[in-house]
Length: 583
Image (cartoon, rainbow, N blue to C red; front, side):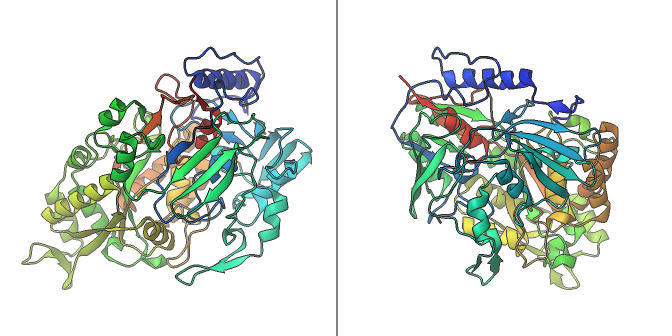
């Protein structure tokens, strides 16, 4: 875990005490908070500070109209659900290489060969409908059809507070996926909806838990209860029976806003308290009294529907076109003009520079080239049989090379970057037409595979290891044919499918030996750097603004106890549970 060699038993009493101290300091906000006794776990003392009925207003990126969707298995689930309502077993800190924080789990132990993971379950927890939380709920959350990992052989509650997960092969590297990103749901509620079915607007049939709307009153263990929802916003109130103590902030309102600029205007006038978004002049918001963090960890890329064998259509299915477009992009100019210098350089290996350097194989480039090389783009295309026409653009067999690039309307940094790519590609003889679409259209297109190029983000790893990206975004086991919606937990939007990569991902996931894992990563990197199913652009700025005048307990530069974005689950739920009002 975290890329370090350590004993297989973790989250000992020392680690637990460290987590408590971390949270106590985070909650203090400058007040004299009492330090919990050693062995007290996060939340048992409640948030240090003052209870407040003042409504905390959050923008987590939702556009209008908002669709009431609190189902953790469904596309478009609203942000409060993941973390605020439903919790994972542990919370991992994506912003720092620290021990995971106990939530519904209190301890976890691997056996020596990585084929068995024993998890201790927190006692005394209830669902927000009053029913007791049990080890059987954990077993159900890992074994229902919507969530069961393909590599899971079995899950058993060996007693009232212990669950044992078993695997046919070692699964050390899937620790985060199991403990940090599997949301625990109530069997007594979800089991009744396993046979549900519905049809999307485009006629696609959905079945089982994915089809269930779960819109009215989601039943979770988290710190908040959903209260109301409308096209414009939804609200939540503090859970008085939360196992970690009733949150000090009693009322939340998540608002739908259709553009970054509108959100920025509301921030600057004090009408939003917490938002993670691109702001070209963050000092203006800070001058209005907000706290500010920039935690760049998530890659921004061009998704390419890359695999013609799985139904992708368009010239981007040709690896030569993808490679030529990649070298035609001036990333330095994009960072300066679209991201105003706030983004960071990206590695074509998708290892996070500065944190994951040891995983970049010898011979692989660390950072991708920042300047454009139109001449190299021309060489790649002409070697693949493309010829430049009188109009200055390349074509093949008389068919023009033209690509459609979409980005979400109102995401101004992405919209500006897309326009720059259109201009830069033209200088290399590649015709790219940029346009904007709604967030719902964006979500539907990438899940169905019916696109050519989309500007979007890759969910960066929550530990210092790129394995999660390799498995989730590049493995053929995590994709579906075009026209078939990706299953929950599948992120391979490009439909990339390479047997050598799949074998290396499997090898990496089956070992706790760093040398063996490094060899597997070298194989993966050789292919993805050449094939570029996702064209790397930058590691995007992740700018979080928070109201520090009315609330305490936020992550700060001095105490970055969790990754701070308002949209990140489950950490956003933990942060909410730790906030309090000012005196």
